Image (cartoon, rainbow, N blue to C red):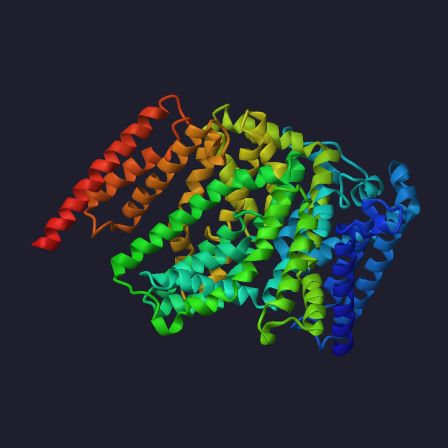
Length: 629
């Protein structure tokens, strides 16, 4: 039974990938098929729900009733959701009339999404979806301020399952048509040996510097994090290699785990993919994808600059050495694999110079990778047919969670629209904030961290973009800044106790205390709690504004991050006194605040930069005297 389930799971996963890639490549139009995008999305959803029930689980094998339940759910998903796909042109016009066949198929679909979501993403997200559904049914029973329009189940089920503002809406379409090609690209990177080459490249580039093992983890996680789609997956994939290496170099287990957790979480904030959220953000904001990437670039780089500087200062403070030479690949060997960079060049050029859609760019980059691997790679690394078949299957298995999460996001968006809850939440946040933007930002940040706890990247962003972003935009915050703000604080839930799932995953690999690892992660990732507030007040950090203002903001931000990092670590050129730590912390914060953020921003910038320069010279001269004496 288990073997047959594995075979059926592989077939469903492969079919899901092939269908999604065909849709992204426009094969349906080429063949003259006149189908709605919603029909494609429904077909992919049917496969994903069936797959989550069919694929073997660790606890299975001895529970016949559970196997029967899973089989029934899988068949019901294929039947109900496929029926919605087949009858979509008819049902979409009659949804408000509550046709019986539509209500039945929709009810089965919604129920199976919730059950499958619990299995794929955990209790938290599934519970939130149930709460939203219950709210839509009984919204009129809640107290003033939270009450909304109640909707009977027949109307609600049809609306959520068929309307373009529900399950078959933008999030699912993005997840099914754009994310899948990028996940396939990521899987092919591993299958062709490109992932290993990037690790070797990072090792060659950073291994010879103090604390090189930690810097390797930072660079490797930044390179792969945005494509992986999950901070936890990034921790697990790269952490099994980097965490033992970091520990061997002299870092404590807690510190090693924190470095990997923070670096992997940052991958979800790093363009071009940002854990698939970049594509959703472009759709929410109705702007070109390239604008999202450019706006997200500077904050993400500042995040990694802060992590890198702290790791370097910690290495100096602890007297850590470089990675042993025998573990570092030769530059000559690494240079042989430089062709692996070309698919990324193709990706960027197609996106920004030729305005290809993200899905098409990812597909062509995959073709480029396969062609180069077949022609240029050593014989041992050339992809075999079995490798490609396995990559197609692994992609289908990897995207099941994303498809279910984006379908669940459609339920949340549908409830917000049909009940009026979205409008009420926006008014509530603005009212509690009392018209003070800083208070509203602090409140929104807390809401983002709490709602983001335990949720995957895509789920975090979609939930917060629909619940919190409108309140920020309503009070005049730039829409890009508002969406990036909620994404940053949603991602920080990955390393913020008590539910710091990325930090806890890294702690499990490192063998460190989970809570202590979470606390260390917060300290290491401090910039992500401050920079989003700053780019709300001054979009220059999002590369918006005059060129000289942008350059000034970025330069002062980097210098400010350096000084604040010195204060946190307690080390610069040598150990810092308590007074010097306070001094560097204050001037660093003043320098970090963009000149355009406040009325007196130019003065705070000047005071911070000049004061910091004086302290740096004083510290350098003091260090020189100590070493001379």
